[in-house]
Figure 1 (cartoon, rainbow, N blue to C red):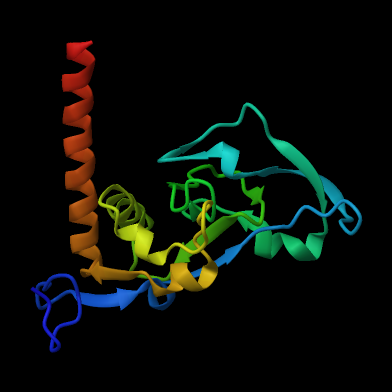
Figure 2 (cartoon, helix red, strand yellow):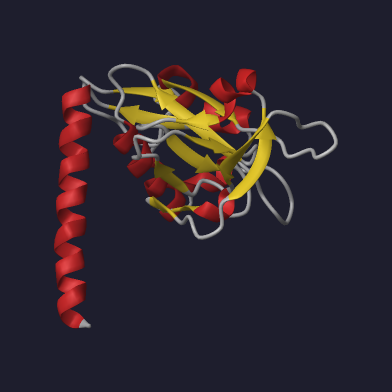
Length: 186
């Protein structure tokens, strides 16, 4: 049980710490589509309909004009964690391509600070999504969303980087075993 002395869901090892997303990563949303105001070079961008758990679908890439000076804010680079703001709020994937991509305003780009694994953050997002803990961070009635402030406030148990990497490796090892088992069963 959680006491007044310890306000977090569970205790973590001494080398770990409880922290908030805002302390371990820089994040922002992308470009707003506004046909009357947007100018610049026509560029492809991804929307929430391209972003799935752990991967992206590119069958329908949209295009909009984006100015050169806007690119830093609305471009994902290799290693960025992208998170849906609405719809299936919290749905996440890591951009793994060497080719940068622009993204719309309903996607959060999370760029972890040094010593923070994007893969660890991805699996943590999957964890709180699957166990329902993400609901405490969502806003709105009907269609719920994960605002920038809400994303900043997500508490996360953070181990040292080497431990983050071991956790990620173990999760991926288990997923590979499950994939083998499931492929044999079908």
